[in-house]
Amino acid sequence: MCGIIGYAGHRPAVTVILEGLKRLEYRGYDSAGMALIQNRELNVVRAKGKIRELEDKLAFQDPYHATTGIGHTRWATHGLPSEENAHPHPDQEHKLALVHNGIIENHTRLKRELQQLGCSFRSDTDTEVLSHLISQELKRLGDVPLAMSAALQKVEGSYAVALISLNGEGQIWAARHSSPLILGLGQGENFVASDIPAFLPYTREVVFLEDDEIVQITPSSWQVLDGSSLEHRNKEQVHISWDVQSAQKSGYRHFMLKEIMEQPQVVRDCLAGRTDSSRAATLLPELDHLPLPRRLHIVACGTSYHAGLWARNIFQEWAEIPVEVEIASEFRYNRRIIEEGDLILAVSQSGETADTLAGLRQARQLGHRVLGLCNVLGSSIAREADGVVYTQAGPEISVASTKAMCSQMTAMLLLALHWGRMKGVLEESVCRDVLRGLEDLPAILEAELEGMQQTAQRLARKYAWCRSCFFLGRGDHFPLALEGALKLKEISYIHAEGYAAGEMKHGPIALVDPEFPVFALAPDNALQSKLLSNLQEVRTRGGPVICLAPPGLDQDMDDIWEIPAIRDPLNGFLFLSALQLFAYEMAVYLGKDVDQPRNLAKSVTVE
Ligand code: M6R
Image (tube, rainbow, N blue to C red; front, side, top):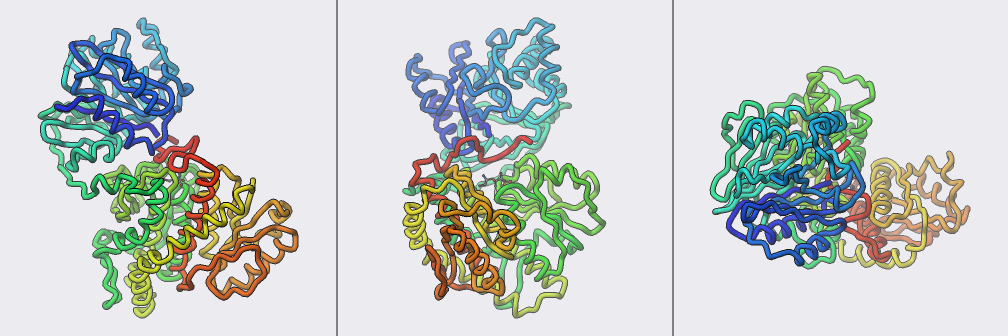
């Protein structure tokens, strides 16, 4: 989705903003722009395409000495990707310019009203409405915060906006409603951004803004105001523990590969301080104020949804808690029965996914309790839920989510153990066994990942020709098959479907022929023999089969990819890594833009 950075400081703003925009590239975008005020003049430079196009345009301008400015990467929602539709959008008189993330839902009506007042529009965006609206209010009220407050109260929808105006050189004004915006506090410089990596090289001191707050930054000061009363608000300053290194590629060719390879550490970090295997205990003080759930409703999108599906059986088996797992965009609109004592578990890496956030809000409005399982500290879901368990995976930059799922699986295992022990239905020995298994897992992953990557590379060369394929699994491995298919399609653009293997003969097997490979997950468990029968049916119809299995599988397959045998459900982590690496190597072999696949954004903050 779109990215925002605003800078007020002592350095050349062009450089700081360009760097910040590059660090936001992972969110996905199709145009970029920047606005600066210098010598009482507002300069706006915009370009369609990548940030380098913007850099090229800036190179032809007079060098800017401005030390205050705002920048934006746009992911088109209203109006095609073009220079005219790129942000910042100036007002008619070129006295202010603003950048915006989100969607102004009542923009058609507001635009009509503004046109009646004589405003002419130069873009097809909903955002331009905001610059004219604030400009009108500024003429009426004479003061930026008053104008922003009055204008934003007329707006329906979601926004994070940052604005510069000739009325206040050296100042940036910003506000948010249902779209993230964070303040970065430096020495003689301050920042606003839609995401922390944008200013991470300069400061790790941040303030999370709440909905309907307005903020002003100058190089030496910052203040947060209530969006309607404009009264001063006291805000807590938070220190972020990530460093620049964790938001950079560190020698890897792509963020996706780096993030897959980080998974051993991700498991360690998620467990840190939360387990005591000698006492078979889990330490999750975040849950202390929440009663034991009677039933769990897991709500999530994409990869986070697959993590929820994977954990369903585990919660049911270890904690005897019935679990429903629903895609957030469906959860919002389906009629369902949620009873007293039920808990909604909103799973989201970013903590900003619009549908998951809306599901959370709806559930809370109806009086239900919500627990967030998030990665991003201070994100909307984390703040609005009744409690939050952080997955502690560090920044995930690649659009394709990998280490986030690994951390969500780890965290949900801990939750299931915790509730199982609390409820008294999980034997101490099982809990101890799993905790020891989890503690050993990082070393096993570390030992395997490199070899896995080599196998993935070899298989990618062999199968990169395919146009369609199936991923098959059973039981806990069916959600992993769904995830394997999602990863492959989103970064290599090869059509892939995940299926529960037993479903093949109910229709999908009709598609199988020698050009339709099947990737199967065959752990050594009670379902293995059933799965192998399903695979023989595929082979009989000429379908090539790649079978991911522990050593010793004595079967005739086109390719057997051996992975170490470890207990269910922990073996899921090895299968997941193999699937991620296979998708990664396929995309690399096919020359795709791995970290920023077409049409996708990292954080889906619109419905
Ligand atoms: O930030 P979230 O976990 O809420 O994001 C959910 C999905 O948008 C995300 O997992 C998406 O499906 C990824 N592109 C998958 O790789």
